Image 1 (tube, protein in one colour):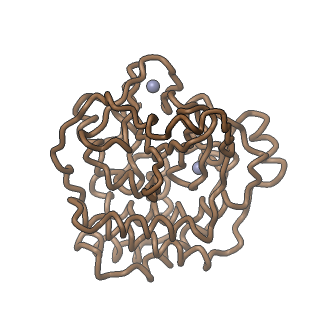
Image 2: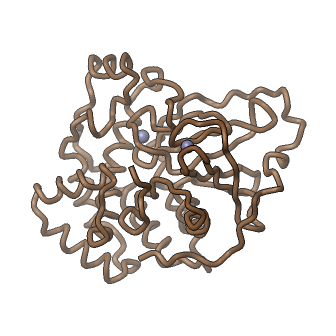
Length: 322
Ligand SMILES: [Zn+2]
Ligand SMILES: [Zn+2]
């Protein structure tokens, strides 16, 4: 479903986007929040709006419109969820003691909320923008029984999606995001551990989809990582591998002419992650902008670096070897 992206030239990043923040914010020390839980009233709406803004004329226009429609359906699905079962206070306390994320899919057992979200998404998604593969996947999911849906969810959550399941996995990913985002919004940020050794989400333990640098703190700004599953964001060291936590051997790549986006590449583990630089005129949304810049993934991948793919391209993009 995803073409490999346009051929663009990689540059080693001699221009430092951080310089664009100007020196005048030095000393302002605007502390970015340590952990920001998702705002259910806006999280999916903002994402859909950003995808629609990115789509026109893009190499991946059809794909971005498909995901925009899916994210719109995610927003609608939120309001129809059953109450759901949060991890209890004792479970959260235990998770905190052992520095584990309380909503880690390996620890917190999901309830039926995600399947309710899935059927709502399948019912409401705008069929006009679905390519044939997605229509077939939608039909198959509408017929699927509980056990096969749960098994699809297990495979998605363990990052093990076969190419043949990729189209169905896009819907499954969307439904699981709805369930996890709703749960994350109900947590108390004060219960969550701070910066993790790797860059995994303090709420659910999932890998980040991308990082966003905003002005504040030092003149280089703060980085917040954004969760690929539950939409929580958390502050993370400005230059540090999100996979292995290394601060040595980090280098940057960017597409020539794109100063607002770089790939942070780690020599220690050959991992990389994307870093977006907030500028005044640009309304960035990490998951949407990640999908709109898959060309950078292709090029950095050709250099031998790997990442955990965006949930909507799992099964289409190779995950890193474990
Ligand atoms: Zn998370
Ligand atoms: Zn690393």
